[in-house]
Length: 43
Image (cartoon, rainbow, N blue to C red; front, side, top):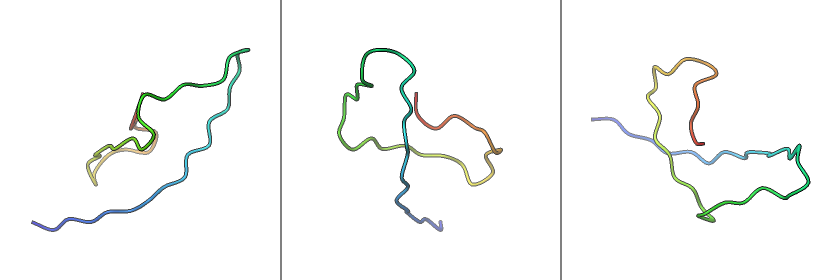
């Protein structure tokens, strides 16, 4: 099994009056290498 890791920078734009809230300071997600462009990674 081949595996790899990478770091990404996500910029969040807030369209409401309240700042965005995150439960974890360092969210972790997994995505298939075959995932289509536009696939949701975290919600």
